Image (cartoon, rainbow, N blue to C red; front, side):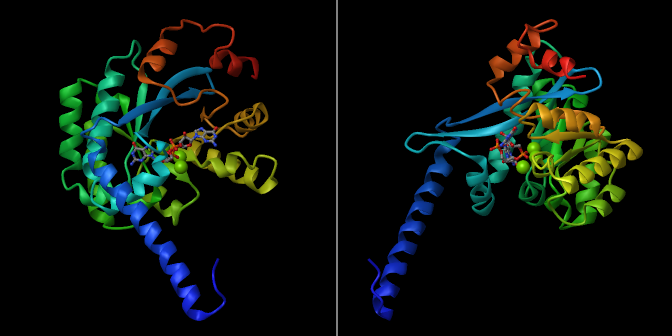
Length: 288
Ligand code: C2E
Ligand code: MG
Ligand code: MG
Ligand code: MG
């Protein structure tokens, strides 16, 4: 369709750009209404301890059920929410919903909530928000884990460290998410006592690759000597699970051991005593 001439090409690209801007504008308007229209929900992915082969917690993951587009991935709308200043209210909704739902579960497992870098930077009252949510939902602070990425620590470092320390003083635990994909990871581990390091999926799925395995091994050892737990993210195969266990990771999370599920389904699997024959915990035990 594009003409080879300069003007034709210009018009072609310009039309494409208008379309993209229009689509973005529509998505933005939809996102602004999504909370009020109750289009968000949280799903929960189980996390297993590899030493005892037990379910120890869930990560809360945000889902947007768009009436026309269907399920929109957080990878797509969280950056947009950050850009248009909606992340603070969406983030508060997320935290409140995850804590309320987890507080109603039949076992006191941990609940991990993602906090984006922008949320940290723009929500002056993040600490107050966490306090008020814990208060209102009755969730024990020790059950709450906040997952932050390296991006959180890039700016305003002193203020950020202050907030992180205050959160820890409340009894909340802090995890470093997607470890190894950002910048200066090692200096951050030195400056702040994270409770957990989540090893990014890219190192886990590369478990055929000697370099990826060497990195997992080194991070697991680093975590152990710093007194931090290590979680291997995105486990999809038995082979990856066996690898992560052999390399000394403390926990796993991934489609193999459990897909993200509704709060009701999470409550359901927490009721299973030892687990039925197909329970992921048994899966884990048989691999030992
Ligand atoms: P993340 O925190 O690293 O979350 C893990 C992502 O990996 C989730 O994608 C999860 O569904 C996916 N995953 C888990 N196991 C597997 C596996 O075995 N294989 C594969 N291929 N993927 C797996 P999701 O839910 O699409 O979330 C993507 C990212 O969006 C998250 O990465 C997190 O950074 C962000 N996010 C999700 N929920 C929230 C939220 O409530 N608030 C904020 N601020 N960010 C969120
Ligand atoms: Mg996470
Ligand atoms: Mg992650
Ligand atoms: Mg990620």
